[in-house]
Image 1 (cartoon, one colour):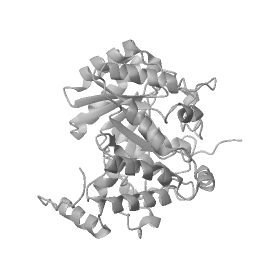
Image 2 (cartoon, one colour):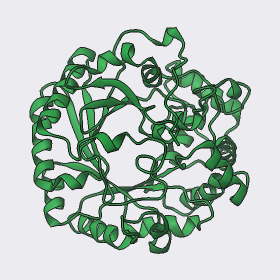
Image 3 (cartoon, one colour):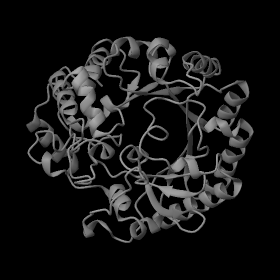
Length: 413
């Protein structure tokens, strides 16, 4: 059966300005293959199949073209800071020597125009002392993908022979710790699993931060999860972790989603793209140089992430004309119609953009995880003791440039 292709975008014409979106993060797919075959992976096991037609690794020519486009974007848009994230697939498949060369070249080409932060998102199964030395030498931040202790992780994150990956990840993490390299953990919410056991495992591993991602699935798959685990399977997983984090002195481990929920409830702005409907100031460059938008949209429709542009022939400022859909996402989408009367319309603000998508209404939908988000926000509000009215007052004060906002009794920082 043919997979559905992306329909023509329905984006308000006012969203297309002809100016480059203010990108500050560039996700570099240095490898288009992976040594793992995770059951839920949105790149290899969902609707999109475009990876099959790309080079396994990014060439030197494509890397040079990418750096030139990033440099030009910084100069044209006055960007003083940029982050380059080495991603995949599994980025360590390119080898440590190659990554070292790419890091050095990035700093050579960009540091006279912008402050450069380098990071890598890896499954850590291939880390060895050489890799750790390279990461240290080039000051590369490390994110590790892991879904919990062995019996949980190895149900989902397996290699191409069906073998679990946990023990290899743990060895890689041990090398990072021995070298004193901080790392964060990226974990996909697993409805039905024991959330506290998973979270405490991450704390025991010594991570400095955790990001809990809602599953990137189709609306049909989300409905199936609700049928199996109840109406709010993700909130049921996350709320016990929040209470552990909030009440039992693990606040020094930054849980990015919880931190941003707290920020928006206090009237501030989210620091993550999955909360608060912020403009998505990042773009993805694939191994062949093609420029893509939000990676998780691969879940929905084959080819939906593509802009039709390539760094060998175009710059990031061309996105506005080549792909109005992605330009609008990068600049910030309107609040979904169905969210306008929600008490969390200015905090949750519709949820993560990929989870809003449908072929019928494009992005004019609440998140497929709407009930979970509302339950989670309600719980966090109750713990913090902040009303909807106080959130609005705080936001108005902050946006109006007030010097101080009254503290909440009993709140933690």
